[in-house]
Length: 486
Image 1 (cartoon, rainbow, N blue to C red):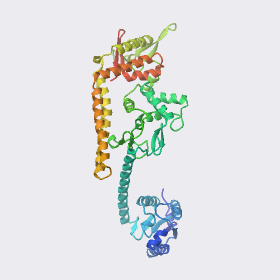
Image 2: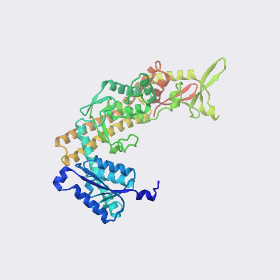
Image 3: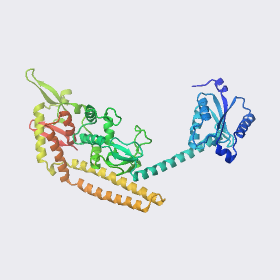
């Protein structure tokens, strides 16, 4: 937007004076002296515009809450001011960050800011250079403030203190998280529904809403709210800072190496092992949403043994004797496959019997090596992350001890914690490599799915199948291949 020339001519020059009672007594900074110097400056430079004086008598510069300064800023925002002149920079603010915020506001409204003692004029090249130097100093000060904040965070965490609002399931008592059992039980149920029952975010949200259980916002649950609960490390007793730039949750996460993670800072609602399992599963692929909502048990899993395409349900038979069949989608939609159709009820019953047989006869040799590797990789990843975090925390303690911020006893405690994590990590990794343990875990999962078939609805059962099965291949009427998830 362009302003007309007369708009600029009609604006006045504002002279700002300020003194606190302490300053006047200590330094002899009278208001009359400030007014005289400012008026003389305007006269010497031959300014022809109207001059108005704004005086804050008895106000310090510790903040910007001053009546005449606020009035001046209102006039400025109404585009009535062309220049603001002070005797010294500290008349308007002693805090550099506040001063820079004001100068930014002045520039936005095309107002020249002048300090006659420092020869500071934002309308000149030297004034703008000074402004850039002040900006660099302010950035340095912000970084120092950030470092102090981080140090305070570490100290607070070591004392078991929580610095923000309490997560759902906890109450904040004297800056410490205490489990709120009523809501904590809901958190445990959410983890159980996702991990043990294989329910998706939306299904969990619907279940809670149907029972009129209020969400953390005291409103209805959303699928995103469920996901955030499942991803929150606070529930396993961890405190994480510096995950994003600022507090806005919509901003992308920083690299994990930049996170500040403290373990065992408060009582956990969920065990670390369960939390790790849930978050490993969150990173894995699942059935497409259409397949999840389909009332047919094997939709999204069943594949044609002839061409490898998915198999979908179609009507077949006559008016007198109608029935449904699984048919190759490539044959149905493109006519490029000669695969035959299979009756839906017979195929699903055949699959159930095959799963039951697999549950009883599963052996170490039958477990795909790739499944074993995946299971180990997930465990290694979780264990490695904990070890990596412990090492980083110990390194920071060493640095803090070097500059005298922590005692030798605190450093030794951190070393003991690191050694404990190293021992646990070694045990976990050895356990993950044991194929017999992988076999037992997989066998338990298959049995749980089979046992749930009699009591669960298909839409609830399908996510459980997706956890253990990669696909089911129909090669012929006599051969079905059940492939474990890889």
